Image 1 (cartoon, rainbow, N blue to C red):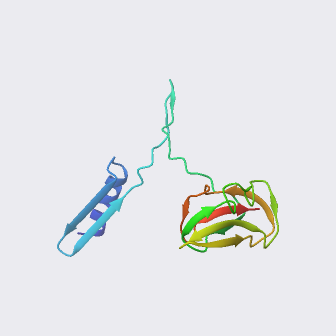
Image 2: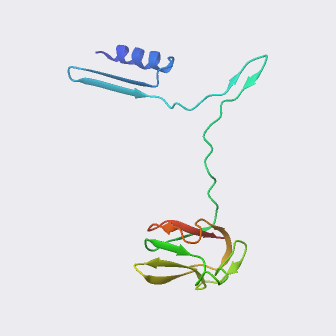
Image 3: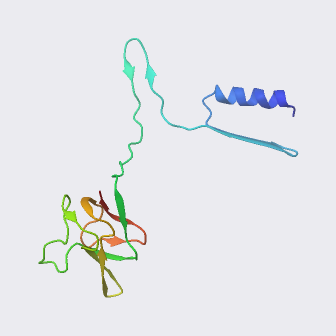
Length: 137
């Protein structure tokens, strides 16, 4: 297969509705793929916008990550108030939450001073290692 044939295949692929093409013969292989993201179509009579996948916007700030796998607790007991709430100012070293792992209660302290912008997990939910549990700005 020569270069002009390859260019022709690529051009035809780009102008088609095909999103995936794979050609293989002898010692030659070509694989072409296109994004299948919906496109906006505009006509004179009406405007049609196909929906795109909406991604959750990550909050800006310092992400506080879980140092271990366990269960997230916002307070030291069910009757107590949470250690922190969204909008609350915290200082470096303040207790943010507890993560229970293998019946051991591990206090998680704030690595920075700032305001708690978001708490990403609910009381009693499991958390994974390096999972963002809070954001501080």
